[in-house]
Image (cartoon, rainbow, N blue to C red; front, side, top):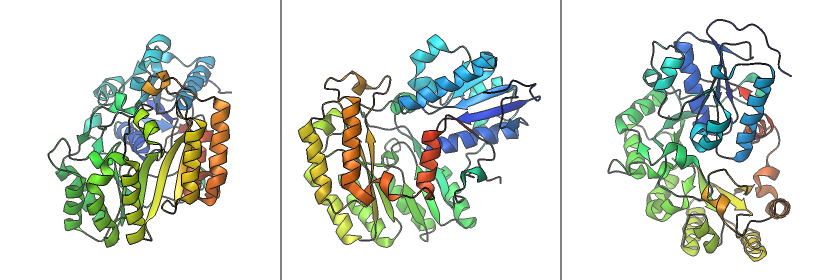
Length: 402
Protein backbone atom coordinates (compact mmCIF):
# COMPACT_ATOMS: atom_id res chain seq x y z
CA UNK A 1 0.00 0.00 0.00
CA UNK A 2 1.22 3.50 -0.85
CA UNK A 3 1.84 6.11 1.82
CA UNK A 4 0.75 9.67 1.35
CA UNK A 5 3.44 12.16 2.39
CA UNK A 6 4.18 15.83 1.82
CA UNK A 7 5.43 16.44 -1.74
CA UNK A 8 8.70 18.17 -2.59
CA UNK A 9 8.33 21.40 -4.57
CA UNK A 10 8.44 21.01 -8.37
CA UNK A 11 8.76 17.26 -8.06
CA UNK A 12 7.40 14.61 -10.41
CA UNK A 13 7.29 10.83 -10.62
CA UNK A 14 7.49 9.39 -14.14
CA UNK A 15 5.91 5.94 -14.29
CA UNK A 16 5.59 3.45 -17.14
CA UNK A 17 3.71 0.20 -17.71
CA UNK A 18 6.14 -1.09 -20.39
CA UNK A 19 9.94 -1.28 -20.39
CA UNK A 20 10.21 -3.81 -23.22
CA UNK A 21 9.50 -1.61 -26.25
CA UNK A 22 12.53 0.39 -27.43
CA UNK A 23 10.35 3.16 -28.87
CA UNK A 24 8.48 3.48 -25.58
CA UNK A 25 11.75 3.51 -23.64
CA UNK A 26 13.01 6.36 -25.80
CA UNK A 27 9.78 8.27 -25.18
CA UNK A 28 9.85 8.09 -21.38
CA UNK A 29 13.59 8.83 -21.42
CA UNK A 30 12.79 11.89 -23.52
CA UNK A 31 10.21 12.96 -20.96
CA UNK A 32 12.72 12.60 -18.12
CA UNK A 33 15.34 14.59 -20.03
CA UNK A 34 12.78 17.33 -20.75
CA UNK A 35 11.60 17.64 -17.14
CA UNK A 36 15.16 17.59 -15.77
CA UNK A 37 16.08 20.38 -18.21
CA UNK A 38 13.23 22.40 -16.73
CA UNK A 39 14.52 21.84 -13.18
CA UNK A 40 11.89 19.38 -12.03
CA UNK A 41 13.07 16.90 -9.42
CA UNK A 42 12.53 13.34 -10.67
CA UNK A 43 11.37 11.11 -7.81
CA UNK A 44 10.86 7.38 -7.34
CA UNK A 45 7.98 7.70 -4.91
CA UNK A 46 4.57 9.34 -4.68
CA UNK A 47 5.52 12.25 -2.42
CA UNK A 48 5.46 14.56 -5.45
CA UNK A 49 3.57 17.47 -6.97
CA UNK A 50 2.68 15.60 -10.14
CA UNK A 51 2.63 12.08 -11.51
CA UNK A 52 3.33 11.53 -15.21
CA UNK A 53 2.17 8.12 -16.43
CA UNK A 54 3.84 7.18 -19.72
CA UNK A 55 1.46 4.45 -20.80
CA UNK A 56 1.64 1.91 -23.61
CA UNK A 57 -1.76 0.92 -25.01
CA UNK A 58 -0.77 -2.00 -27.25
CA UNK A 59 -2.41 -4.74 -25.16
CA UNK A 60 -5.39 -4.65 -22.84
CA UNK A 61 -3.27 -6.12 -20.04
CA UNK A 62 -1.28 -2.85 -20.30
CA UNK A 63 -4.56 -0.99 -19.80
CA UNK A 64 -5.28 -3.04 -16.67
CA UNK A 65 -1.93 -1.97 -15.22
CA UNK A 66 -2.84 1.70 -15.71
CA UNK A 67 -6.29 1.25 -14.19
CA UNK A 68 -4.82 -0.55 -11.19
CA UNK A 69 -2.31 2.26 -10.66
CA UNK A 70 -5.01 4.94 -10.92
CA UNK A 71 -7.11 3.06 -8.37
CA UNK A 72 -4.17 2.80 -5.96
CA UNK A 73 -3.41 6.51 -6.33
CA UNK A 74 -7.05 7.29 -5.63
CA UNK A 75 -6.90 5.19 -2.46
CA UNK A 76 -4.06 7.29 -1.04
CA UNK A 77 -5.86 10.50 -1.98
CA UNK A 78 -3.57 11.65 -4.78
CA UNK A 79 -5.52 14.31 -6.68
CA UNK A 80 -6.48 13.31 -10.23
CA UNK A 81 -5.85 16.85 -11.49
CA UNK A 82 -2.15 16.28 -10.73
CA UNK A 83 -1.95 13.08 -12.78
CA UNK A 84 -0.99 13.31 -16.45
CA UNK A 85 -1.23 10.35 -18.83
CA UNK A 86 0.92 10.45 -21.97
CA UNK A 87 2.08 8.00 -24.66
CA UNK A 88 -0.12 6.11 -27.07
CA UNK A 89 -2.60 5.17 -24.31
CA UNK A 90 -4.60 8.44 -24.34
CA UNK A 91 -5.55 7.79 -27.97
CA UNK A 92 -5.88 4.00 -27.98
CA UNK A 93 -8.10 4.05 -24.88
CA UNK A 94 -9.71 7.45 -25.41
CA UNK A 95 -13.38 6.39 -24.83
CA UNK A 96 -12.61 4.90 -21.43
CA UNK A 97 -10.48 7.83 -20.27
CA UNK A 98 -13.13 10.36 -21.28
CA UNK A 99 -15.65 8.58 -19.06
CA UNK A 100 -13.53 7.55 -16.09
CA UNK A 101 -10.47 9.81 -15.80
CA UNK A 102 -10.54 13.51 -14.92
CA UNK A 103 -6.84 14.32 -14.99
CA UNK A 104 -4.82 15.45 -18.01
CA UNK A 105 -4.38 13.26 -21.11
CA UNK A 106 -1.73 14.37 -23.58
CA UNK A 107 -1.68 12.57 -26.92
CA UNK A 108 1.43 12.01 -29.01
CA UNK A 109 2.38 15.15 -30.99
CA UNK A 110 0.50 17.33 -28.49
CA UNK A 111 3.41 17.61 -26.08
CA UNK A 112 3.25 21.40 -26.28
CA UNK A 113 0.53 20.99 -23.65
CA UNK A 114 3.17 19.62 -21.28
CA UNK A 115 4.97 22.97 -21.56
CA UNK A 116 1.92 24.61 -19.97
CA UNK A 117 1.29 21.88 -17.40
CA UNK A 118 4.90 21.92 -16.18
CA UNK A 119 5.46 25.65 -16.71
CA UNK A 120 8.44 24.78 -18.87
CA UNK A 121 10.84 27.45 -20.11
CA UNK A 122 12.52 24.89 -22.40
CA UNK A 123 9.84 23.46 -24.75
CA UNK A 124 9.51 19.69 -25.14
CA UNK A 125 10.20 19.90 -28.88
CA UNK A 126 13.52 21.67 -28.32
CA UNK A 127 14.90 18.84 -26.14
CA UNK A 128 16.74 16.29 -28.26
CA UNK A 129 15.81 12.62 -28.17
CA UNK A 130 18.07 10.45 -25.99
CA UNK A 131 20.01 7.88 -28.05
CA UNK A 132 21.54 5.77 -25.29
CA UNK A 133 19.41 4.24 -22.54
CA UNK A 134 20.48 3.40 -19.00
CA UNK A 135 19.03 0.39 -17.19
CA UNK A 136 18.49 0.56 -13.41
CA UNK A 137 21.03 -1.41 -11.38
CA UNK A 138 18.16 -3.16 -9.61
CA UNK A 139 17.31 -4.94 -12.89
CA UNK A 140 20.66 -6.76 -12.70
CA UNK A 141 21.15 -6.77 -16.46
CA UNK A 142 24.07 -5.44 -18.52
CA UNK A 143 24.02 -1.85 -19.69
CA UNK A 144 23.00 -1.39 -23.31
CA UNK A 145 25.75 -0.59 -25.82
CA UNK A 146 23.36 0.17 -28.64
CA UNK A 147 22.81 3.65 -30.07
CA UNK A 148 19.13 4.21 -30.92
CA UNK A 149 17.98 6.43 -33.78
CA UNK A 150 14.32 7.07 -34.44
CA UNK A 151 13.84 7.16 -38.22
CA UNK A 152 10.05 7.22 -38.52
CA UNK A 153 6.76 7.18 -36.63
CA UNK A 154 3.51 5.52 -37.64
CA UNK A 155 2.84 2.86 -40.25
CA UNK A 156 1.12 2.18 -43.57
CA UNK A 157 -0.45 -1.10 -42.49
CA UNK A 158 -3.91 -1.99 -41.28
CA UNK A 159 -3.36 -4.95 -38.98
CA UNK A 160 -6.75 -5.76 -37.50
CA UNK A 161 -5.40 -6.70 -34.05
CA UNK A 162 -3.44 -3.46 -33.55
CA UNK A 163 -4.47 -0.02 -32.27
CA UNK A 164 -1.09 1.71 -32.39
CA UNK A 165 -1.82 3.32 -35.76
CA UNK A 166 -4.79 5.01 -34.07
CA UNK A 167 -2.29 6.80 -31.83
CA UNK A 168 0.61 7.29 -34.23
CA UNK A 169 -1.03 7.60 -37.65
CA UNK A 170 0.54 7.15 -41.08
CA UNK A 171 4.29 6.92 -41.59
CA UNK A 172 6.15 10.17 -41.00
CA UNK A 173 9.84 9.84 -41.80
CA UNK A 174 12.57 11.75 -39.98
CA UNK A 175 14.51 13.97 -42.43
CA UNK A 176 17.82 12.45 -43.49
CA UNK A 177 19.93 15.32 -42.14
CA UNK A 178 18.63 14.68 -38.62
CA UNK A 179 19.36 10.95 -38.89
CA UNK A 180 22.80 11.66 -40.37
CA UNK A 181 23.69 13.96 -37.47
CA UNK A 182 22.79 11.27 -34.92
CA UNK A 183 24.60 8.56 -36.91
CA UNK A 184 27.79 10.65 -37.00
CA UNK A 185 27.46 11.25 -33.26
CA UNK A 186 27.24 7.47 -32.69
CA UNK A 187 30.36 6.83 -34.76
CA UNK A 188 32.33 9.60 -33.06
CA UNK A 189 31.27 8.29 -29.63
CA UNK A 190 32.56 4.81 -30.43
CA UNK A 191 29.27 2.94 -30.88
CA UNK A 192 29.35 0.05 -33.32
CA UNK A 193 25.74 -1.11 -33.07
CA UNK A 194 22.96 1.21 -34.14
CA UNK A 195 19.24 0.45 -33.96
CA UNK A 196 17.04 2.22 -36.52
CA UNK A 197 13.66 2.52 -34.81
CA UNK A 198 10.07 3.03 -35.86
CA UNK A 199 6.65 1.41 -35.82
CA UNK A 200 7.05 0.36 -39.47
CA UNK A 201 10.78 0.80 -40.02
CA UNK A 202 10.80 -0.46 -43.60
CA UNK A 203 8.19 2.12 -44.62
CA UNK A 204 10.86 4.80 -44.12
CA UNK A 205 10.89 7.35 -46.93
CA UNK A 206 7.48 6.53 -48.37
CA UNK A 207 6.46 10.12 -47.59
CA UNK A 208 9.79 11.57 -48.78
CA UNK A 209 10.08 9.90 -52.17
CA UNK A 210 12.86 7.57 -51.04
CA UNK A 211 13.13 4.30 -49.08
CA UNK A 212 14.93 2.38 -46.35
CA UNK A 213 17.57 1.00 -48.73
CA UNK A 214 18.58 4.50 -49.81
CA UNK A 215 18.84 5.46 -46.15
CA UNK A 216 21.07 2.51 -45.24
CA UNK A 217 23.34 3.02 -48.26
CA UNK A 218 23.64 6.72 -47.42
CA UNK A 219 24.60 5.93 -43.81
CA UNK A 220 27.12 3.29 -44.87
CA UNK A 221 28.73 5.84 -47.19
CA UNK A 222 29.48 7.87 -44.04
CA UNK A 223 30.89 4.88 -42.15
CA UNK A 224 30.53 1.21 -43.18
CA UNK A 225 32.13 -0.22 -40.03
CA UNK A 226 28.86 -0.64 -38.19
CA UNK A 227 26.21 -3.21 -37.26
CA UNK A 228 22.61 -2.16 -37.91
CA UNK A 229 19.47 -3.39 -36.19
CA UNK A 230 15.93 -2.78 -37.38
CA UNK A 231 12.50 -2.95 -35.89
CA UNK A 232 10.06 -5.64 -36.92
CA UNK A 233 10.26 -6.32 -40.69
CA UNK A 234 6.63 -6.42 -41.81
CA UNK A 235 6.06 -9.23 -44.32
CA UNK A 236 4.68 -6.75 -46.88
CA UNK A 237 8.15 -5.31 -47.41
CA UNK A 238 10.05 -8.57 -47.78
CA UNK A 239 9.72 -9.12 -51.57
CA UNK A 240 10.44 -5.46 -52.37
CA UNK A 241 13.63 -5.13 -50.34
CA UNK A 242 14.93 -8.70 -50.17
CA UNK A 243 17.79 -8.33 -52.69
CA UNK A 244 19.26 -5.27 -51.02
CA UNK A 245 18.75 -6.63 -47.52
CA UNK A 246 20.53 -9.80 -48.60
CA UNK A 247 23.38 -7.61 -49.82
CA UNK A 248 23.63 -5.90 -46.42
CA UNK A 249 23.56 -9.27 -44.64
CA UNK A 250 26.40 -10.58 -46.79
CA UNK A 251 28.39 -7.43 -45.99
CA UNK A 252 27.99 -8.23 -42.29
CA UNK A 253 26.13 -4.96 -41.66
CA UNK A 254 23.01 -6.86 -40.58
CA UNK A 255 23.42 -9.82 -38.24
CA UNK A 256 19.83 -10.16 -37.03
CA UNK A 257 16.39 -9.77 -38.60
CA UNK A 258 13.05 -9.72 -36.79
CA UNK A 259 10.29 -10.92 -39.12
CA UNK A 260 6.61 -10.16 -38.47
CA UNK A 261 5.24 -13.53 -39.62
CA UNK A 262 2.16 -13.91 -37.32
CA UNK A 263 0.90 -17.14 -38.97
CA UNK A 264 1.35 -19.45 -41.96
CA UNK A 265 -2.29 -19.78 -43.03
CA UNK A 266 -3.05 -17.30 -45.83
CA UNK A 267 -6.77 -16.99 -45.04
CA UNK A 268 -5.99 -16.12 -41.43
CA UNK A 269 -3.27 -13.68 -42.50
CA UNK A 270 -5.79 -11.86 -44.72
CA UNK A 271 -8.11 -11.69 -41.71
CA UNK A 272 -5.28 -10.10 -39.74
CA UNK A 273 -4.91 -7.47 -42.47
CA UNK A 274 -1.58 -8.96 -43.54
CA UNK A 275 -2.21 -10.64 -46.95
CA UNK A 276 0.71 -12.75 -48.06
CA UNK A 277 1.84 -15.21 -50.73
CA UNK A 278 3.33 -17.57 -48.18
CA UNK A 279 5.30 -19.88 -50.52
CA UNK A 280 6.99 -16.83 -52.09
CA UNK A 281 7.64 -15.29 -48.67
CA UNK A 282 9.14 -18.44 -47.21
CA UNK A 283 11.21 -19.06 -50.35
CA UNK A 284 12.87 -15.67 -49.88
CA UNK A 285 13.68 -16.44 -46.25
CA UNK A 286 15.14 -19.84 -47.19
CA UNK A 287 17.48 -17.98 -49.51
CA UNK A 288 18.56 -15.71 -46.65
CA UNK A 289 19.27 -18.78 -44.54
CA UNK A 290 21.26 -20.48 -47.32
CA UNK A 291 23.34 -17.49 -48.38
CA UNK A 292 23.79 -16.01 -44.88
CA UNK A 293 24.06 -19.03 -42.57
CA UNK A 294 25.14 -16.92 -39.58
CA UNK A 295 22.17 -14.54 -39.82
CA UNK A 296 19.90 -14.70 -36.75
CA UNK A 297 16.22 -14.84 -37.77
CA UNK A 298 13.45 -14.20 -35.26
CA UNK A 299 9.72 -14.48 -36.06
CA UNK A 300 6.57 -13.34 -34.26
CA UNK A 301 3.53 -15.64 -34.18
CA UNK A 302 -0.03 -15.14 -32.92
CA UNK A 303 -1.90 -18.20 -31.65
CA UNK A 304 -5.69 -18.29 -31.35
CA UNK A 305 -6.59 -15.37 -33.63
CA UNK A 306 -10.37 -15.24 -34.29
CA UNK A 307 -11.19 -17.83 -36.93
CA UNK A 308 -8.18 -20.04 -36.24
CA UNK A 309 -9.59 -23.56 -36.49
CA UNK A 310 -7.90 -26.66 -35.02
CA UNK A 311 -6.82 -27.51 -38.58
CA UNK A 312 -5.20 -24.08 -39.04
CA UNK A 313 -3.36 -24.45 -35.77
CA UNK A 314 -2.17 -27.91 -36.80
CA UNK A 315 -0.93 -26.33 -40.04
CA UNK A 316 1.13 -23.92 -37.94
CA UNK A 317 2.51 -26.70 -35.74
CA UNK A 318 3.38 -28.88 -38.75
CA UNK A 319 5.19 -25.96 -40.37
CA UNK A 320 7.46 -25.42 -37.38
CA UNK A 321 8.14 -29.13 -37.03
CA UNK A 322 9.73 -28.98 -40.49
CA UNK A 323 11.09 -25.41 -40.49
CA UNK A 324 14.88 -24.94 -40.61
CA UNK A 325 14.92 -21.18 -41.31
CA UNK A 326 14.04 -19.47 -38.02
CA UNK A 327 16.37 -19.40 -35.02
CA UNK A 328 13.83 -18.10 -32.52
CA UNK A 329 10.05 -17.77 -32.32
CA UNK A 330 8.27 -15.27 -30.11
CA UNK A 331 4.70 -16.57 -29.92
CA UNK A 332 1.78 -14.80 -28.31
CA UNK A 333 -1.70 -15.91 -27.36
CA UNK A 334 -4.31 -13.65 -28.96
CA UNK A 335 -6.39 -11.38 -26.77
CA UNK A 336 -8.86 -8.68 -27.78
CA UNK A 337 -7.56 -5.13 -27.66
CA UNK A 338 -10.17 -2.43 -27.03
CA UNK A 339 -10.85 -0.60 -30.29
CA UNK A 340 -9.03 -3.07 -32.57
CA UNK A 341 -11.13 -4.37 -35.51
CA UNK A 342 -10.29 -7.97 -34.58
CA UNK A 343 -12.16 -7.55 -31.30
CA UNK A 344 -15.39 -7.52 -33.34
CA UNK A 345 -14.60 -10.55 -35.51
CA UNK A 346 -16.57 -13.76 -35.14
CA UNK A 347 -14.98 -17.14 -34.61
CA UNK A 348 -13.39 -16.29 -31.25
CA UNK A 349 -11.22 -19.04 -29.80
CA UNK A 350 -11.84 -19.82 -26.13
CA UNK A 351 -9.12 -18.41 -23.87
CA UNK A 352 -8.43 -21.83 -22.34
CA UNK A 353 -8.00 -23.26 -25.82
CA UNK A 354 -5.64 -20.44 -26.73
CA UNK A 355 -3.58 -21.27 -23.65
CA UNK A 356 -3.41 -24.94 -24.62
CA UNK A 357 -2.37 -24.10 -28.19
CA UNK A 358 0.27 -21.68 -26.96
CA UNK A 359 1.72 -24.30 -24.63
CA UNK A 360 1.68 -27.01 -27.30
CA UNK A 361 3.52 -24.73 -29.74
CA UNK A 362 6.06 -23.90 -27.03
CA UNK A 363 6.74 -27.61 -26.55
CA UNK A 364 7.04 -28.22 -30.30
CA UNK A 365 9.47 -25.32 -30.70
CA UNK A 366 11.68 -26.48 -27.85
CA UNK A 367 14.77 -24.30 -27.58
CA UNK A 368 13.55 -22.13 -30.44
CA UNK A 369 10.72 -20.80 -28.28
CA UNK A 370 11.62 -17.43 -26.80
CA UNK A 371 10.02 -18.61 -23.58
CA UNK A 372 12.09 -21.82 -23.38
CA UNK A 373 15.45 -20.81 -24.74
CA UNK A 374 16.50 -17.97 -22.50
CA UNK A 375 17.70 -18.23 -18.93
CA UNK A 376 16.52 -15.56 -16.51
CA UNK A 377 19.98 -14.01 -16.66
CA UNK A 378 19.51 -13.32 -20.36
CA UNK A 379 19.01 -9.59 -20.94
CA UNK A 380 16.05 -9.82 -23.34
CA UNK A 381 14.19 -12.27 -21.12
CA UNK A 382 14.97 -10.33 -17.94
CA UNK A 383 13.56 -7.11 -19.39
CA UNK A 384 10.55 -8.97 -20.78
CA UNK A 385 9.80 -10.41 -17.34
CA UNK A 386 10.14 -7.00 -15.68
CA UNK A 387 7.67 -5.54 -18.17
CA UNK A 388 5.28 -8.48 -17.81
CA UNK A 389 5.35 -8.90 -14.03
CA UNK A 390 5.62 -5.27 -12.82
CA UNK A 391 2.46 -3.20 -12.48
CA UNK A 392 4.59 -0.11 -12.99
CA UNK A 393 8.21 1.03 -13.07
CA UNK A 394 9.59 4.40 -11.95
CA UNK A 395 11.62 6.12 -14.67
CA UNK A 396 14.69 7.86 -13.30
CA UNK A 397 18.22 7.95 -14.68
CA UNK A 398 16.98 6.34 -17.89
CA UNK A 399 19.26 8.06 -20.40
CA UNK A 400 22.98 8.73 -20.77
CA UNK A 401 23.61 12.37 -19.96
CA UNK A 402 25.55 14.32 -22.58
